[in-house]
Image: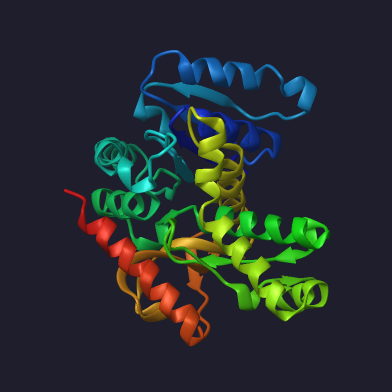
Length: 316
């Protein structure tokens, strides 16, 4: 059986971690593309040379030519400027729109049958632009944000309750920004509602306050990392999150992961890319999981979708 091929567009911090994770998990042969000469070649040589130590055997190639992404099964796009302290994701829109335009044209020309996972910010707008330019079917152009936002939410819950992160299930919906929707009602520790456990620990009133603080921290979690790093934004966590999505697609795992998908009536949204739970398999998005939101959740979702619409509308 031929090995799968994964192409990574953007050789920065996220691109390098993505390449290493693909190799470590032996997901397939990997191509790392960047416009800076020598950068992707150097990173891939570095990762390739540790194959005997980490016991992986895949082909790793760095390139400055889109031609090398030919035949890709999955393309992950990280190209674009990262955030700096004081910047919102939306501040990046003008410069990253130009970068995404040329990236999408390259993918369209050389990897027309691939499934695209976009990580570049502002996420919801960049996925929209990528799909528009490639003209790929919606189920083959998706965005990574919800896996990461949900993992951040789950981490804060685990630390607060003193339990293993492995046993916490938590999910966020909506846009990848300050109006994202962490689903408090559905957060659980091995099936037990987190709200109940917080109430046991602190009492009803304080438990509610603690949850509100975690929701707030989740919404600002990316900015928290940016403020600490001072020179860029998170890269380990977005890379791992995108790999979870890519692995589900490449291995046809049918995992249900929060994904930035194009909605056509689901959750009352029509014609926009928004984060929702989706089944990811070999065809890309194979099903969008719908469920009923209560009035408060729906109001938050509507606010988040409105922010996405405004962001997309601001693109030239």
